Amino acid sequence: MKETVSENITMLIDDTGRYIEAKTELWKLKAVDKTSKIASSLIAQLTFIFVASLGVISLNIGLALLIGSWLGEAYYGFFIVAGIYASLCAILYFTRQKILKTPFYNMLINKILK
Image (tube, rainbow, N blue to C red):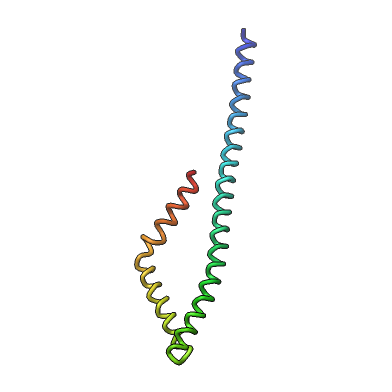
């Protein structure tokens, strides 16, 4: 009877050790999974932003040259386009909490908790 109790206790301790090891390994795998999903999503978005930025820059140069040709001097068009972007930056600065920070935080938290 004593041998069975001590054997059961030993088996219970061994099982508990294996359970803790398995649980730790599961946490590690979940952390790696979430990190890789966030990193791949971030890389995909940064790639898209880079390519879109190249297109927007080309479009802006063309627009500035077009406006400049309408006004007689090329630099007028660049000043007008720069003024438009300065206005846009001011709007984004004053609404950055609502437009930029909160949606980014929510997206990041959603990706972490899924």
